[in-house]
Length: 120
Image (cartoon, rainbow, N blue to C red):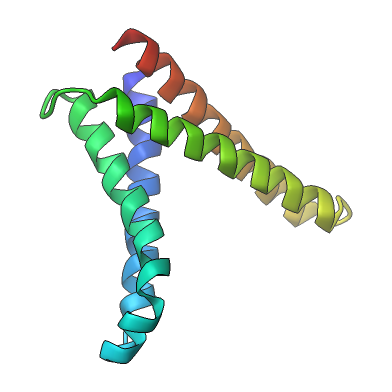
């Protein structure tokens, strides 16, 4: 459980950090100020996942607030992905594969985060 949760948190931290860097890339000062609040969302997700990784591997004390926040975010992402998938329809095979992988990954991460939260 610890290894799988670490892999999922690491992947999400890398993805969210990459989204933040891409949003800042070439934006200049006015672009950063204009999109600043939107860049905080993936940056915060990356930081929260890195904090969970630190707690998982003993570099920091586990914080229940961080785990609850990530659990709620994972549930919201799963619900948003389900709503998006339902609105787009199930006709495209490639879209169905991508949707099932994303929904399954975030659901697994939420489940593992909840299990880790119970053990803390």
